[in-house]
Image (cartoon, rainbow, N blue to C red):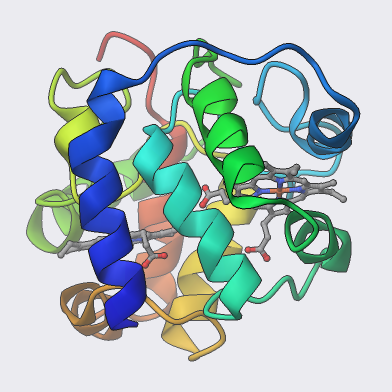
Length: 198
Ligand code: HEC
Ligand code: HEC
């Protein structure tokens, strides 16, 4: 846990200096099968959007799958793929997907639940999870959730809540434990209501 945290903070500081995307190599094409070359997530609604996530966060997430803090319960091939990567491939993948332009899937949502979710987000989550177009998003402590695919967010929140995914920060674990099942639904609808430029 401590190693993950210090590596993450180091990357967050270093990442703003790096930029160029590598050419398409065979190992990177494996990622495209599920996340798409544009990083927007393909076919299966469980494949998350990874376009435009700051590189330090992508690296941190990949190492969490490699060291078991995150388990690939629904899709074992995700963990199998990333455990074969070298450290420089992890960095290259993070740079590649962080520099993809984040488009929008324009998810459906229930407006009433989204309004309730907006309040919950402000109270419990907004300090760390900024919208992807916020100018400070690269410096945010958490990964952008606005516009992420709803099935994936619902699954991820439940996994932290049920102890199947180890959160990097105890503060987040504490906030998630304040919620109940209806709150999860409200938050997911709120994140799905996000439209670029809001
Ligand atoms: C077989 C489909 C599949 C392949 C191949 C795959 N992924 Fe994934 N990826 C997923 C799924 C599903 C998840 C969510 C897993 C979970 O947490 O249970 C995920 C999660 C992630 C996340 C975390 C996203 C977030 O929002 O926290 C990153 C980063 C990621 N993948 C990068 C990669 C990279 C880089 C590659 C190629 C080296 C790759 N993936 C290959 C399906 C795949
Ligand atoms: C103190 C800062 C902080 C707070 C508050 C916080 N989070 Fe997080 N969150 C993080 C960090 C850091 C990560 C990435 C590392 C990890 O997996 O724990 C993360 C990751 C996540 C993920 C996984 C995203 C992905 O793409 O895989 C979800 C879902 C999530 N948080 C939901 C929430 C919700 C819902 C709340 C409010 C109830 C919340 N978080 C509050 C810092 C925070």
